[in-house]
Image (cartoon, rainbow, N blue to C red; front, side, top):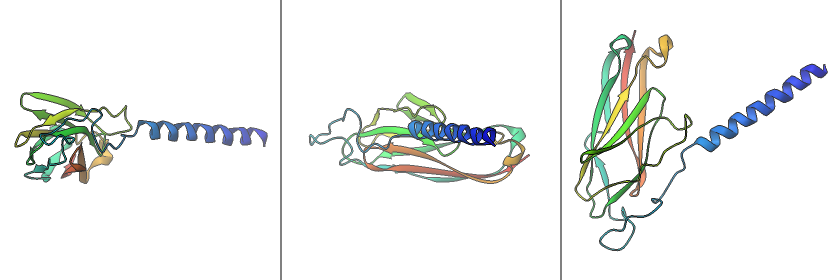
Amino acid sequence: MEKNQNKFILAGVVLAALVGFIWLARPASQSAPASPVLGKNGLPAGKAGALTVQENNYDFGSISMAAGKVSKTFAIKNTGTDPLAINQLYTSCMCTEATLKIVGRSAGPFGMPGHGFAKRINETILPNEEAEVEVIFDPAAHGPAGVGRIERAVYLENSAGAPLELKFSATVTP
């Protein structure tokens, strides 16, 4: 009986350590960049910034695990009057990675929080400047159990407010 009690205590300690690690590795929500970029009005960038996207929901249709990874590039733009700070980019699943591309430079790829530490980007999109978020999905990442309809998302945290959400879906076949 004492051996079973020790096993339950050990399992509880291991579970508590795992939960603690996952909590520490989560992305920290940021409402402003670590070192704010100042706009024309002297306020932190993004106070008059607005991040827009032409298409924020894409359907790959039917894709095959055997055919390999698929990608989609989302076009985004700062339609505001001040520079917009990009703080973090992360995905909803390990099967997805995303890269931010701004005028000849790129940051990434970034994946799902909790699988490594969430990295900050610290990039800026100037007023009327366009950028791209390239999303790569690996339909084979979940193995044979991953067939069927999937929906995933990519989140872009920025100084304009709520994160920009880019969604995609597909029907995965073997």
